[in-house]
Image (tube, helix red, strand yellow):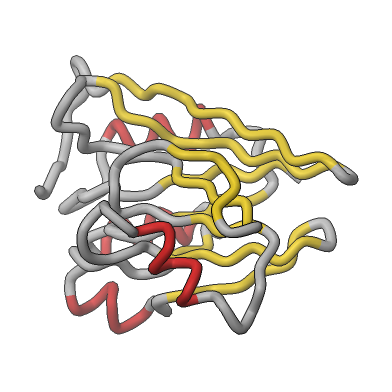
Length: 172
């Protein structure tokens, strides 16, 4: 199972960057997951065209937040995957997220909020943050991720997505 993962799109509407991510980069994925901060209903509708599963983030408008759950648990290839955006300071973010999922005990947690790519074990749980799909204060390159689950193996990849020369619909 090949999963496209994105977070923190922060878009006021679908644009060329989102099209590139969904139609090109995630073209051969079996599933798309969004870890929040979609921001606008029109972007959520574009994600739904691709059957993406999403959670709301702290920057999502009331329409998006009214539709999406704050957390999700899905099963993929006999693994439980938790999805959440995250909240508060970047310091201690992963630990706060672990506490949120303490009762469900997922095998993998996908999260966003920090805009910083991460793959690693925290408190006995694998955690994956694809970074920000459209907003990086330090670079023109933003990131999305691929999570591939096959038998006993989980592989990850971070993909840089350049925002140069792209007409954007960004909403900080």
